[in-house]
Length: 467
Ligand code: ADP
Picture (cartoon, rainbow, N blue to C red):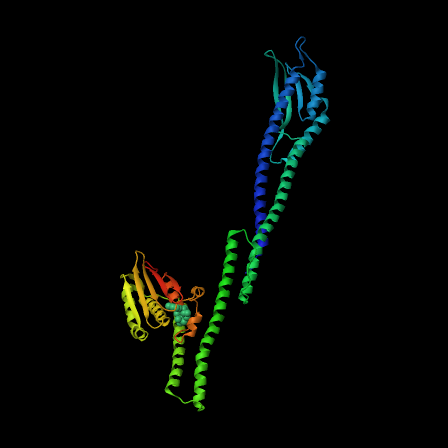
């Protein structure tokens, strides 16, 4: 398919549009002005003929019934130059003065030149010389007759034709200037559109080549183009984030895997070499590391599930309080081991959620509360029922989270230094899973904590969540 360059396409369309507009305006103007002008010329001609008749009749001498023929002659010749051929009769229709008679050649010359001029310039007019008879009267009595012949319906002299030609030239000049203006405007307009588009194309190419730092920096005044550029910049940003996250994930996973694998390897090696005896404690230690590894793998699996599947929710009406009691029941032995008091209190709250996922959320939070509690203390789930939502608070009286870490604990693999030192710490994925599930339910999660005193996680699940 042949593809047009936007710049020339716009310039050409602009020029064509202006050309069409100018042509229509010129044609209409020309027709209207010409016809008005022709009407005016016709009227003038009529008036002039009337004038001649009036002037001639004033040359009648009433006292002796004679005519001032000299004056008539002067007038006749003068009128001839203007294309009027006159013939004066007395009241008995005897010819007194006749232009043709007087100078036949001149008369024919005038008639011919007028006829030729008009036939050339107005071939459709179908004009010819016609004679109009005027009855000359004085005080109600006929004093004579005047025949005036002129080119009918009208005749235009050189000046009139020049006027029309000048008018057409002006229209053509205006048209030409507008046309050039239109082409320039078209090119400028096209430039203002083409430039940012070309830049966007260049940037998206860079992005597709892996340069995620490419950004469109200039500001654009066209709304749609601005939105396009903004969208491309946003895409670059999110791709850069994704890329960073991917790299981070790889390095974190490697790090998390290396420690237990290294520990197990060195233990095994020494036991094989006979440097160490495979005592039940050492085997237990290896087993614990393997447990950690398998825990990490299942955490990663779960994370993959909630993050990659687009999280299809299988929703039903669930009582949050009952669900929390079930979860707390599952932790009975761990609570007992750490001498912790596990409580579920508060309202009954029915929400429309994916029961398996929300159970996972509560499980992760309660598990953390137990993990990060010292021996003895309270782990409490409080359910609150409001008009629009069900609220779950998971509280503990454990080690708490440093203020500077609060914002980051929901990130993948993020663990506070304190928890790293604990044997019980996980891989830092639990809260990421919690947050992803809560967000999939259009819910909100927040945390308050004080170091050494404990933490309180709050989850708000809307009752009319998305289906
Ligand atoms: P982990 O598997 O390490 O517990 P999480 O994503 O569940 O990972 O939690 C991230 C980090 O947030 C934990 O390593 C810990 O430092 C901190 N944290 C989470 N819950 C608590 C809590 N109840 N008390 C103190 N610290 C917590």
